[in-house]
Amino acid sequence: MDVKQLSEERFQIYQDVYSGKIPKRIPVTTGPAFEATIQYAITKGVVPAGKTRRDVYWEPESWYDILDFANSEFYGDTPISTGAIRLPILYQILDAKSIMQSESGVMQHPEVHCLEPEEYDDFIKDPMTYMIEVLMPRLYPALDTTPGRRAMIFAQAVKANADHMGMIGAAMAKINAKYGFPKSASGRSTAPFDYMADFLRSFSNINKDMRRCPDKLLAACDAIVPLMLREGLGTDPAANPPYYRISIPLHMGSFISNQQFEKFWYPSMKKVMDGLVAYGHGVDLFVEDDWMRHMEYMNEFTGSIRYQFEKGDPVYVKKLFTESTPKGSVHTITGFYKSDNLRYLNAEQCIDEAKKLFDIVAAGGGYVFNFDKGLFSLEEPVATNLKALTEWIRDNTDY
Image 1: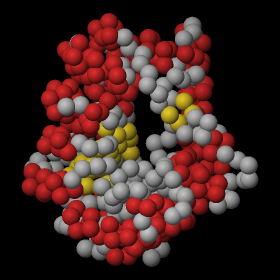
Image 2 (image 1 turned 90 degrees about the vertical axis):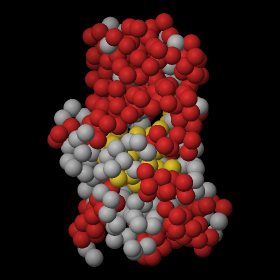
Image 3 (image 1 turned 135 degrees about the horizontal axis):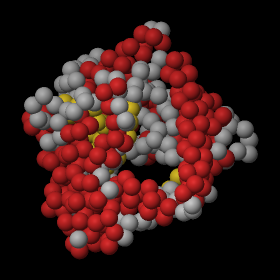
């Protein structure tokens, strides 16, 4: 099969799954974290001697060789890429407090907040303006300057980020053509409550707000729904291709009670989800940690929704999606397969674990193989087991 045929086959099996049809075979998505890919390339001598992972993050000219090598080593029906990368050049120019690069090169998100509880009313009136004028200079101190200089620094940061992202795009276009990966288009958004917790109020403060000023928190979540829709859809949603999908990592559900979830998390997120699928686009949710107690609410989302599960009960989820998914919607399962298997089991045992999972979740379609979370290491025996597992899935899971 030539790369064009392979690309077409891969595109079709994903489209079949997302539209509720039984695909030719189980699609394979792996997507190691970029940190893992870089370290693997360093170990294998793809990166010049003496370079560290931190160095590589600042050298986008080397990223094609790293990603090309990774895609030549490991099988998948979607490419190994940088993923939803946070580029250090952007955050350094802005002198960011919200995202920082560690000594090991990993981009980290410390516990920070920029919105004070007494500022909720002003924020709710006009969230975008308040973020630009008040909150961003707190998170990014380089912007805490005169309006003219702020505009120059912001433009510099955006340009630097765009240049690096452009290099990623060019590298991935070459890799897709070389290895026959399918066409794709994607965006990224955030659950409103998660956004409030991640950057505006912080994890600890939002837990206080649910008790001390619940009405203001609810109003703030509703106020940023349009911003979350624009983040996911872009400025011209109708121009996105029909296979466009929006990724949303879900953070806070496992930390709050059923009552808090029902009151604070779900209502604004349902508005976001309804707005995203209104244009016919699919949504890919990364359900971090264990959300089983919230799944009846999660199953109410309409449209083509893919759920990547880190923890939980695959038997329960498969039954729920099979019997109770809203009419006209398609809910796809991925995840559940423990990435730790690659570290602690041998290749045969890794395959056996996949067989057990497939017996539960892959019957009748509606399943894409992926791990419970991103692979953050490709050190042995992970790499060897990953190769054996994904190649076995490719060759042995025809429907």
